[in-house]
Each structure stands twice: as C-alpha cells, then as structure tokens.
Length: 122
Image 1 (cartoon, rainbow, N blue to C red):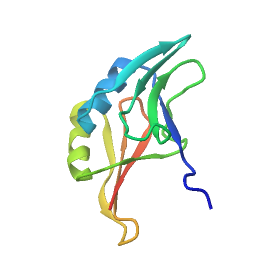
Image 2 (image 1 turned 45 degrees about the horizontal axis):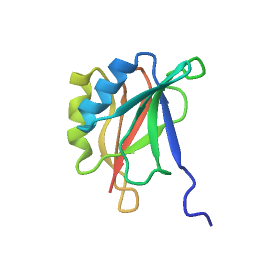
Image 3 (image 1 turned 90 degrees about the vertical axis):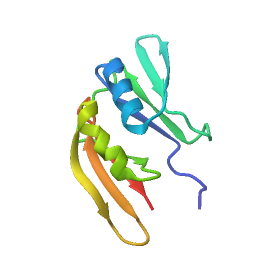
Image 4 (image 1 turned 30 degrees about the vertical axis):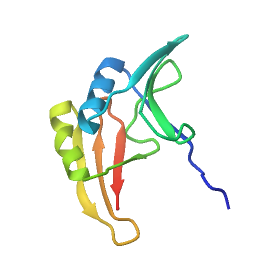
C-alpha cells in the first residue's frame, strides 16, 4: 500500500485575482502567486511540499462544477469557512453535515469561479 495517493491539486480559474481573493478570504490565509508562460498560479500554503495545491489560470484549465471534487481541510470548524463563502462571492451547496465517526463532517460550495469544492474535517 502507498503512503499517499493524492499529491497535488490544481483548481482551474478564469479570473486569478477574484479566485485568489476568494480562497484567501474563506480560508484566512495568504497565497503566493507566480506566472510561467501562459499560465498564472497561486499556491496554497502547506507544510509538506508533496501534498499541496494551487489555483491555475491558463488555456488548458477550465472551471467546472461537474468535474472532480476537491476536498480542502476544514480545520478547525468548516462551518466558519462555509459562513465566509457567500460574502466572498461563492455559493454554499451543502451545509456542514455529519457523516459518522470515520468520515467526520463535510460541506460543499461553488467557488467564485464556479468550481464545486468540498470541505472535510473530523
């Protein structure tokens, strides 16, 4: 069995400034940005480099509510994060919901770009 299966997440965006402001607001963090060729990136701060993610704007990246669902750590209380979503320009599509002792709590929202994103926390 592998130690890790998922090592990197890319969330596509159409407006980097708006998307970066959205995630910085709801997660209460700062993201570093960089440009490489035609693509713009904003990185989520993480302790372990091989287990992270970023926002990406470029010709190969298109936001969608119908694609893969990314779950972000909802620590310490995902209800607080969800409460910031509407003001930041997103839409809550699942309030904080308890799934049991093994899965904890989840919630879900559409971000400022229209991506479906989940939150999870034990």
